[in-house]
Image 1 (tube, helix red, strand yellow):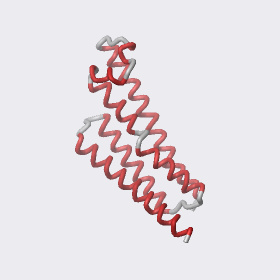
Image 2 (cartoon, helix red, strand yellow; image 1 turned 120 degrees about the vertical axis):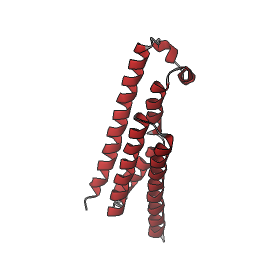
Image 3 (tube, helix red, strand yellow; image 1 turned 180 degrees about the vertical axis):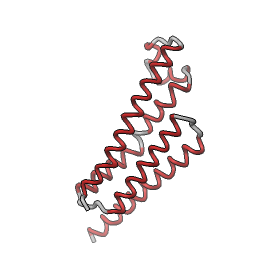
Image 4 (cartoon, helix red, strand yellow; image 1 turned 45 degrees about the horizontal axis):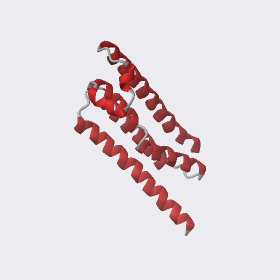
Length: 143
């Protein structure tokens, strides 16, 4: 197997992040224009409590893509660098990415919290299992 295949899920995550960023900007500008919000009123995070949920949801989803996904990016890089890429990691990476897409889709559409949370929880479990296996395998290699 080509170890470089692990880069594909990374690319898909970056594409998701770019899409959510674009959606956030588009929604923010559209809503601000439609209800005549002065951009200066958006100068701090505290201001967001006064604006419609339409503005905040995409922004929160965008921020979320810089939380747990960071450890996914790090693990993927470590797998590549340590030549540890395997079919397990490749499949798990794609499962993780699909779950992150589902999470963002739910957040940006009908936003049912229970559904969104299930996708989030499962994605976290996948990346934590990946980290557990990587850590275990690394410890074994030292022994």
